[in-house]
Length: 241
Image 1 (spheres, rainbow, N blue to C red):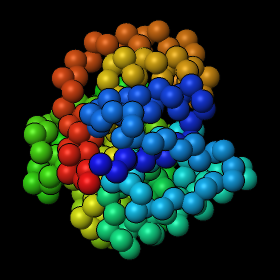
Image 2: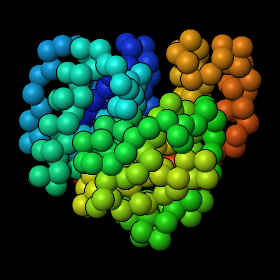
Image 3: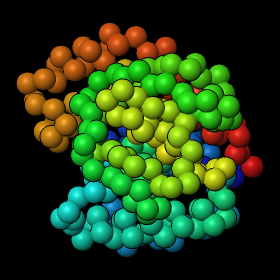
């Protein structure tokens, strides 16, 4: 089997934790998930022929930032060109949180901070199209997932198919064509994963530092049965080659 590729922009420890959570919920071995840290410049080209599919993780960048560092500019230029190639080739791709911002802006949608959400568990509702989508096979019409984002997709690209929605942030998941997916929520996070990330991001502006202990407690009492993880395992099973 060709490996999947995880593209990341997080700091080293957060990147390691993200890799492990993505790998675990894809349900693949370490040999079947390669990780590339995009902030390690220069960025090497990606030959899609070497992979079964691409996962773009979350990270500290916001695609809608007005002022961007040279590193962020280079990363997003690379990702924009990759999204173009993914779409042209109809190559399997799923972007998580930051990924929805990158894809939305590249394909002509709107990203801003109107529907930002604090760190917590939300209820996600599938649309009729989502209920019929193979990546959501076995996922209930309503399920819980963790969120925490400073920006969101306010208007999807014109040809996007809305697959899942939320009350505070309407666009939670959509598909472009047949194989390009993005989520606003985090299908890779369970309570322990989120608690680890909360500790690492204590001073990253997602919450006040004095809220950290309560947020960790809330994560463990949110009672997520794990339906959100099926999106990643379905992605791996569908596209492994």
